[in-house]
Length: 126
Image 1 (cartoon, rainbow, N blue to C red):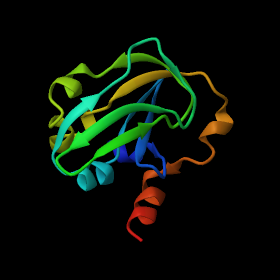
Image 2 (tube, rainbow, N blue to C red):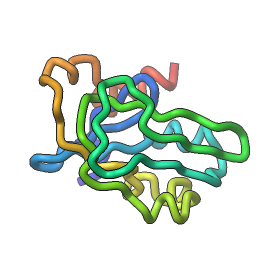
Image 3 (tube, one colour):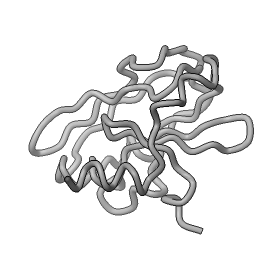
């Protein structure tokens, strides 16, 4: 099963993947494609809490620097140091290049505006 069948996406191009008690957060394939060659990723520390909509990471490419927003409120429980050490991995394998894993701290209502992947793709392809 492809990751695209399981993720929820934001209109700002982050994805959320439920994995039991935690959620992985990363950039959608569309975001990675639009950024171009990614050269730097700055990730938060484990233990930091973010509210939905907060900037939690920065990604820089040869084209631009982009802030990455938290799709739901949560506490960072793991960061993907492999992506921080090799930012180009996002370009090569976005499905396995999550940025952080969180424990959700907000309500389920925060997830109401997230799109399934098919709806997200329709929106960005317009």
